[in-house]
Amino acid sequence: MKETKERAAIPTPVPGRPKLTKKQNFLQAVKFTLFSISAGAIQIISSTICKEGFHWPPMGCYITGLVLSVLWNFTFNRKFTFKSANNVPLAMLKVAGYYAVFSPLSTWWVGALTRIGWNYYLVQIGTMLINFVTEFLFDRFVVFGKSINTNALGKKEQQKLLEESKNR
Image (cartoon, rainbow, N blue to C red; front, side, top):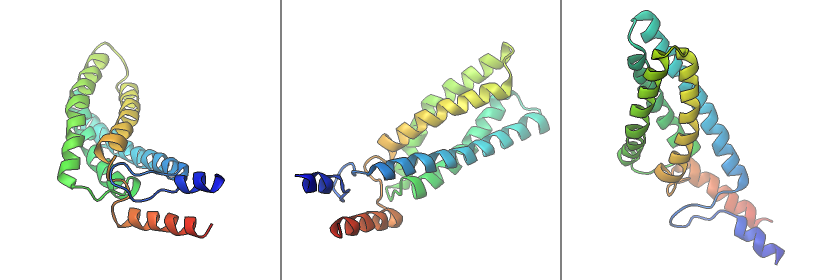
């Protein structure tokens, strides 16, 4: 019976949502976090340039930084975190759907909170944390949920796990 449980835990390529090991799930979260940190740096740097260099209003600075960070984050997470070979325009359309809701809401609260005296940078960091958690969940389960490990890197990883399970 123990052998059956171990074999059931080995991820196998099946239609629908792929079964990931605990280690794969953990590494996904770590990679997403690291790419999100780099995207956050892009967002902060670009919005700071807009605010301090061009003297744009906070909402314009925020949305410019957000767009640049989204493009960066999507590109790297699709390839290296979720290892997805799904239809890029369709995946980007799903991400655009997420941002069609998140962007107006967050742009509104950035403007509203800074108008009543909240520090722009603290509001931006709080907004980025909310974005980080909700976007990971949306990407993981909606955008890439059925296409995880379908690109060359992911297939190689799954094959390696399959071979290791046969050698046990």
